[in-house]
Image (cartoon, rainbow, N blue to C red; front, side, top):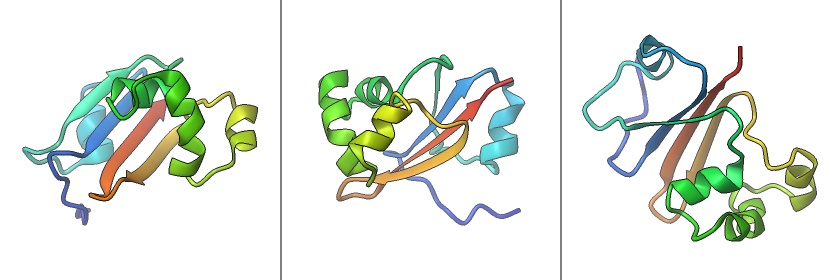
Length: 107
């Protein structure tokens, strides 16, 4: 299967939860030299994740601004406690169209 998206150096591939090293190539392959992977524990929420990526100064600032960024309502995110959805989440942010691809594996 051909990867039609060419990642740039500003894009992030994020793995959350229990995964094997081979999952990177399986789910994100074929990989190229620009691919960056970050890993987080399965209990991280979206505000803390975006803070860790350096996109916001604090989790509170992220919580306030994420609804606009994700084109979602605050009520929807509050209802889910700003949790990262299971499976794949693909987010494009900013003027440079930075791509953040999240895979949350729960076993």
